[in-house]
Length: 423
Image 1: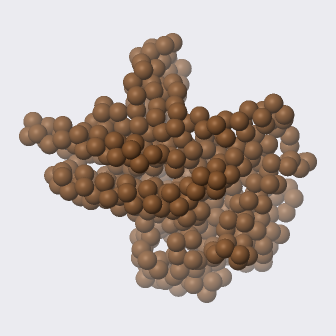
Image 2: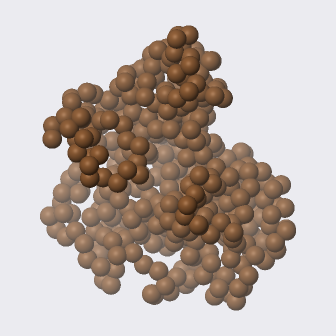
Image 3: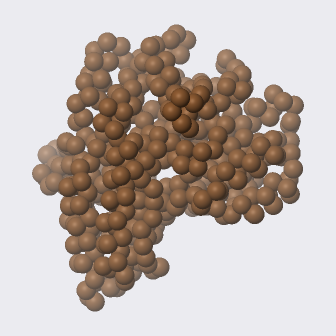
C-alpha cells in the first residue's frame, strides 16, 4: 500500500467506521510539517489535536523512546519504575503558582488517556464523599458544551447531548449549566445542598469551540466549591503542558484546584494520562480501589520526561504565550478579510479558533484549508481550531495563515456561497 487511495480502500474494509477520516494517509513528519502517502506536504496546525507538543521526529523525544525501548518497555504497578517517579516529581513541581512556592498538587496517578484521567477524577470525588460518610454527595456540576471523554463516567460530565445518544450514560447525577454563568452555578449548588461532590471545568472549552473562561470564573468556582464542601476538578487534558502559555491553564487565574487531569501533549504522541491531586486527597484511592495496567509504564513516562525537558530547555512555555499572540493577530486579520465567512478569533496561547458566521459550515473551510496544505480540526461545528506544535516556527505560522486566507478566498466567490453554507 503506497498511495492515499490504496490505504483508504484497505481501511474501508477492515476498520470500524466510527471516524470520519479525510482521504489521506500521513506517512512521515519533521518538525511542524507532514507528508502524506502521495508525497503532498502539509503544515501541521492541529498536532493530532494538541498532542504532538514537540512536532514530529523531535530528536530528544525520539532518542528517549528508543533508549527506553532498548532497556525495558513495561513492568507492572506492583513494583516501582524510575521514569514514572521522576515524571511525577517534575509534574507536581510545575503546579506551583510562582517560582519558589510550594507545589499546589503533590501526588500523581498515571493512566493512558484523558478519558482515563477524568474517570480517575470522578472516582476520586465520589470515594472521598463515601469515606467521609456523606452518602448523598454523589452529584457533579459540569457545563454545557464541555467535553471530558468517552467512557461512561466522563461522558456523563460532557455537556453535549449528541455524545450521549444511544449509550444511556448516567447524566441524572450531573447538573449542566452554561459555561461562565456563576449565578447558575450558585443556584444549582443551593438547590441541592450537600449533594455535590465536585465541579468539573475546563480553563478553555476546547471541543466546545475554543472558548476561554471569563475572567474571575475559575476563582469563583474555587470559592463556591470550598463553601459547599465539594472538590474543584480542572480538566487540563487539552490546556495543560504549556498549550496556553502557562504550564497549566488554571495558572492564568491563580486558583488552587483539588485535582487536575492531563493527557494529550504530555507524551508528545505517546499515549499517557495523569491525575494530579493535592496532598489531603492522597488517602482517598487506597490500594486496590483504582488502577491501570499500562498506566505509568517506563516507555510512556520516559517519553513524557523528554517532553517536559524539551519544553524547559527550549523555552516553550514562554514561546507558546508569545507565538500564540502572533497566531491570534494573524487569524484576526484573516477573519477581517473575510467577514462573510468568519465572525472572529478567540483562544489562549497556542489554542486558537476562528469562529464561523452563523450558517457557515466549519468543515467546508477545513477541507479548503487541507487542499491548500494546512491541517486543522473543527470544534463545536462552528470553529476552526488551531493547535500547532509548540515548536512551530514563526515562518510556518505565517505561511499557514496565508494559506488559510487563500482557502477562504476560494469560498468568497458568489458561486461558492451555497456550498459554503450547506457544508
